[in-house]
Length: 253
Image (cartoon, rainbow, N blue to C red; front, side, top):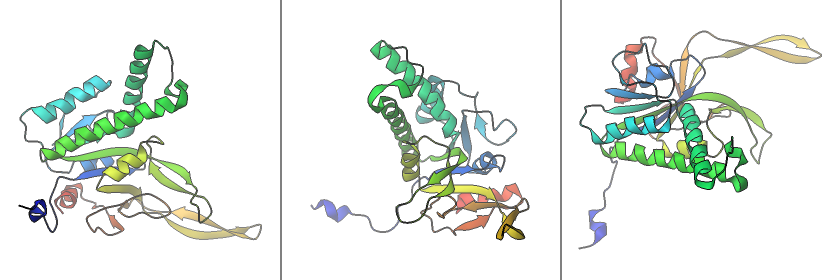
């Protein structure tokens, strides 16, 4: 019998992999914790006051991180979402582990991965990144969605066809950011809505001032100001509900 006779047509439902990043204090963790029956692996203390989310102690080492991840992969539980808050702090933990591993294996006493010749430090971090993605795949095979949270930074972007400009990016490593963004089904950027109004002219040039309230916007498609994407046909941008209880509606969509 032909293998192709078993080909599947149409959409295939699978647990989501989502990367959420945004400006400080906008509620990234709260938004993520409104997902279905979540467990949060804390690499920083950002969920102490959030109820209805499973959590253990904040992890300080890669061994502690892997212990919690392995428990989620092997023990019986009813969690449906695993949140890593945050993956940029997780990268710092990975960097410490990678440096310790290299020094022990090579009899060195480097204090930074940048000291490893021929880009060896960057290669190590990429390997740790891919190991984490394997863990995420294993969670999704168990029917568990994955949400990664990252802080944001402003980075200069130099495309080949237009002048350079600045945009928001996840605050991740140069060699790992694109890997995480490619892996995830959704990359969502959270920011406050900001409008601009013209002020007086200075030396003949119009000056604009940013004004805005506290309306929080989730951007789900890329624009010159930020990176984002989604595979669910979401609008380019939508307002997060004022009532945080309504966040759960997003994760059910």
